[in-house]
Image (cartoon, rainbow, N blue to C red; front, side, top):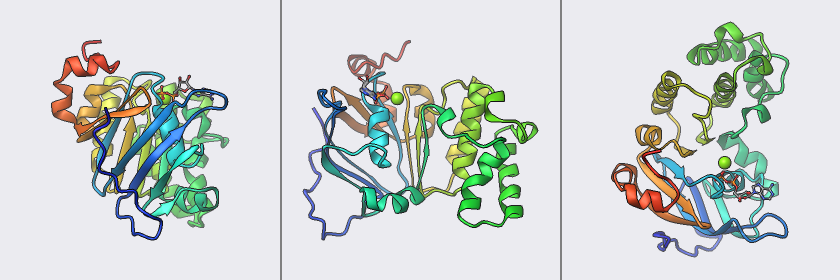
Length: 254
Ligand SMILES: Nc1ncnc2c1ncn2[C@@H]1O[C@H](COP(=O)(O)OP(=O)(O)O)[C@@H](O)[C@H]1O
Ligand SMILES: [Mg+2]
């Protein structure tokens, strides 16, 4: 059962100190049983959190609720105290950098350099400054030679890194990544971990089933199964619990 029973049923007038707070969230796709049945948790400044769960357990659905792409049937979400609602989405999105499971959803300009400068330019950053920063970010991800290529000329892993560069160009306070290591070889998985460990953001939340990689970049794990957060604990001891993870659809030896 969920180990998070301490969430106060706070009224709207109380201050919220968590960076991300989810209260009793229920989400169902239309005409279907809920995928997320009663989700509550809070993430605090400095938290580096893994969202684990088998394929189909609802990780992407939960993340899309957090950024307001999907609206829960019941429950509340607060981002630095701001309730996530249609009218607050511009404020909410300004704080969150979100990398979709499918990087193709994120890259739409003729070149990846333009993809990475698009956000900052939208916020009024001068072109020369935006381009300098974009080139630096592309270099960080080994993509400087591809700056003038379009995303569909890159490999899946390179697209993922380019999408991440575009997100980091906006200096988000909160970084939410959906399956960031998909398509990356071990050297790039290591490099991505090193980049993430250095980021000065408030909170990082990463959905993945790449358990060992998660163990290197996060300290805390939420495990989603059966529509509930079944476990909320430190990640290292959890990774030793092979049997428990296996029962939650996350065998560690496969
Ligand atoms: N657009 C959709 N319409 C109906 N059901 C969906 C849709 N997207 C996802 N689902 C279902 O919701 C469940 C959770 O999916 P998802 O959040 O993508 O899981 P995960 O990211 O953990 O693999 C799955 O059973 C999936 O089939
Ligand atoms: Mg998913």
